Image 1 (tube, one colour):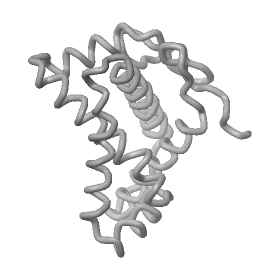
Image 2 (spheres, one colour):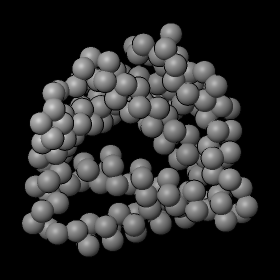
Image 3 (tube, one colour):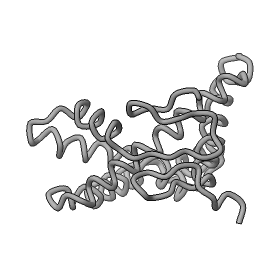
Image 4 (cartoon, helix red, strand yellow):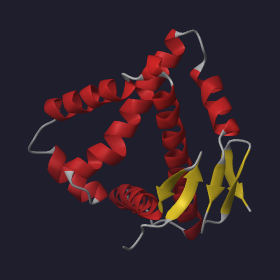
Amino acid sequence: MLGFYPVARVNGEFVLYRTFDERANALERFETKNRLVLGGDGLTQEEQQEIKRIVLQSLVAERIFEQYAEEHTALSGVGKAADVVVERTLKDADPDVLPQATKEVYGWSLEEFSKHVLYPRAFQNELKNAIESSGVSFEEFEKTQLTNAEISLYTVPWKWENGQLVSR
């Protein structure tokens, strides 16, 4: 049951520590590998904290966007459209390279990579297209949604203020 406790509550729905930790570890691994390839040093403690902050901020935004799409029937096709983008991306990728690369770079299977990287990005892009097609700036939409959301954070050194994570 490791990690099955919340790290955040977003409009009444929990974000589990396990998801947060998996993503933060994968991004730290990615950044560390990039630095080593370029002949650099590993991540500093401050950089590791910043990665965790970015990951949690992203998870909160993803949850808010998913909730918004669920509440608005005009956006009901956004998730399906994102699934199609992910399927197409995987189909177009080299089947001999992508699985090995995701394992090596992120420490994830292709399924985990799709769930944690490809789908959230595709979902946000599809939501952005839908929002902007109605004449609304996605940046303004995002700012409003993040600012108006009810966010509670647990066991992290940040607080939610004006639509973003800030130090306590």
